[in-house]
Image 1: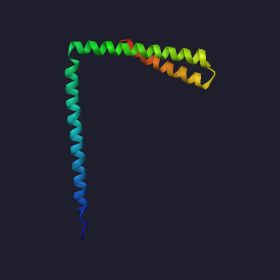
Image 2: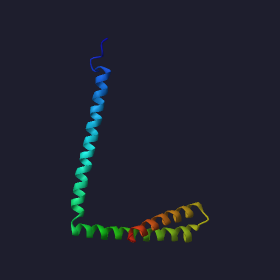
Image 3: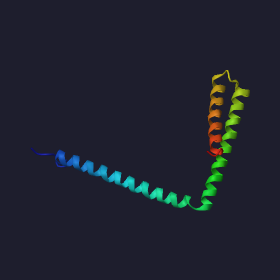
Image 4: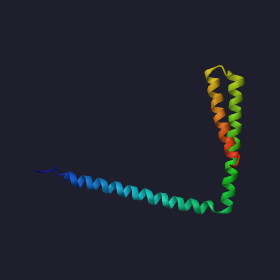
Length: 106
């Protein structure tokens, strides 16, 4: 039995595919390890922690305000009885609750 010139025996093809998969997974593990180490190094710095905390609170406040504005717009301008008003108010409720959870320390 002869194989085409470009293809090897089926067993070797399977082993090569398995080897590529294992190398890919090892590369992903290495990448995740390096990134987690770098993030831990950055976040252990006091100034960085303060900046992350302030930015997180600011983002939470912005989301809360946008959510409240969307609820008001959906309720007062579009009307809750319409589909668009209900959808906008629902989106506003999601944004406001996300912002509130970001602001309140748990």
